[in-house]
Image 1 (cartoon, helix red, strand yellow):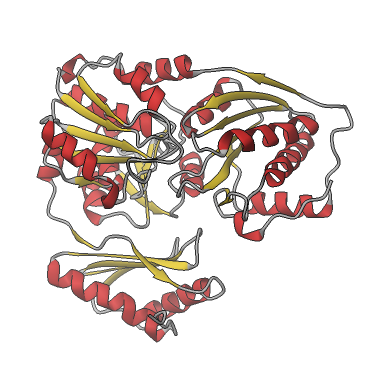
Image 2 (cartoon, rainbow, N blue to C red; image 1 turned 120 degrees about the vertical axis):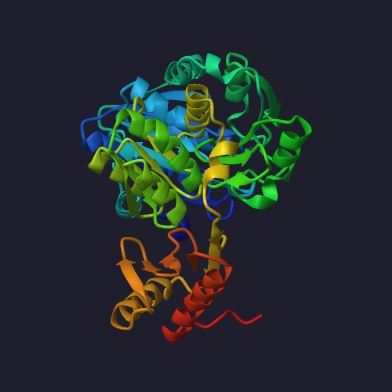
Length: 467
């Protein structure tokens, strides 16, 4: 069988496109056949699949499973589920591979596939190879068709989350708000909160692939107004939000402040470092120096690494670090867990830390120094030019360094730390754009650093898009 994918859907971290435009039912079948061929070459046959609540997900799941079965795979379908529950099922069934059908936090007309092989991310070169294999032609299984079995593992997943939480009696009975955003976490959150201490108010737990209440992105400030309002209305100590497939978390503290993923990682590092003194804690390159400095103050070793959930999971395994986190809300815990990104586990970990210490996330944020930082700056740039531009900026930053330069980190793009703060420019792995950010020691330093980003880009040949 041969099949040619639209090249725009074969991305760095997953396969993703617009339904009936760049992504079709035929693509889903071909992904099943191609993935089965790769698993079969490794003498494997057990695959777990799941799906989010998007309107197109059942159809894509049907065609994906048909392709997998035609390729000789024995498929276990766990149905509608958050992506981390699919990762949990991968471990629970000791599968050879796993695929989640999800459009994540993208608009409702998008969908895609997140993939796992050997309990590790299937990404980047793996995805490119699958595309090449299908273009060249793949044979179906010579030993005949596989099988398809359906099973709900919600109870087992929730039981594992409760075991991780341990004794939460120290939490008391505070008000807590949960916003599922009509995504795949809804039924699990309803069941979980019914078994936890506290007074829980769950918003939008009914799954609706149209996302009628707000866009399912819990770190976009524009989507958090309903969660923030509910925290205020109920005098809650925390508001917890999830993206469409439950692998990213967004938080609002008791004073209505958004708590970014890097700061949340620093908060959870307290508990981790009580168990693993001096351990390495991994942050992505967009993370705040405030978060890194806090980990240092606890005796931990903060490390910057490449942005992207697949990169972070691989780094966690390579270093045996117990915790990693991204500014985007992907958090990865390997202490008493499996090291994959799980927003529900992150939420439980926050409650566990509050119960053990008696300090909530609000008091933690109160203790931090003020942060003067930009939001994530997304700068339009041609796909064919973005990596060369970043390389040019990096070369110039080394040959002609900023005044007071203390460090130049090129693990993912270029991050320059100076006496005034730091700035970052990297090429997006998911779109035709550059991603930039800056953080200064005060407001004037931030303004200078942000201006420097654009000055460096212009010197490298970048031109703003015509309005």
